Image (cartoon, rainbow, N blue to C red; front, side, top):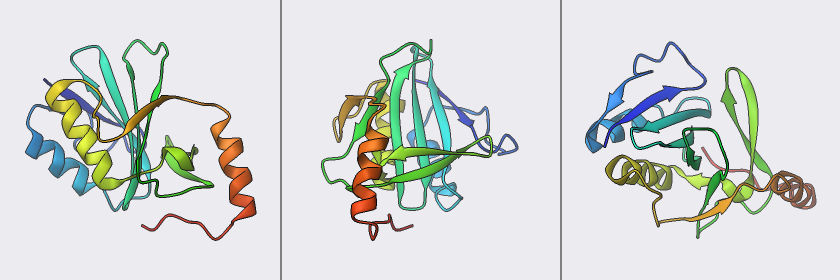
Length: 154
């Protein structure tokens, strides 16, 4: 399969718009962007599906959906949650976009999910997939206020 990489934060990213067919090239691209300020990128498959990924240090997030923009929007949830409460902001066109704690993954999980998507065009089973819950932010932030010491490590 082929995926097209679109950096939603930095349009001047030299790899922006690149079509990737090899796992080693995708892994190199992701690892090369790991230490930037947390941002969102899209991996658009040639099969009618896309994987939106957040990359930021040792953490990230992932959403699987159709390229037509119609629901469902399936969010990856790790079996070993990095955060129990709060949220992480990823930049999209210089706009901080919050993702609830339940949707925060390790960078290694994001990379594994991305490589699986490149190989198969489908969702990886290293995580569970849940339909996006608009109430997740409110619930996870409420928990954050009760336990404000919880912050992901970069």
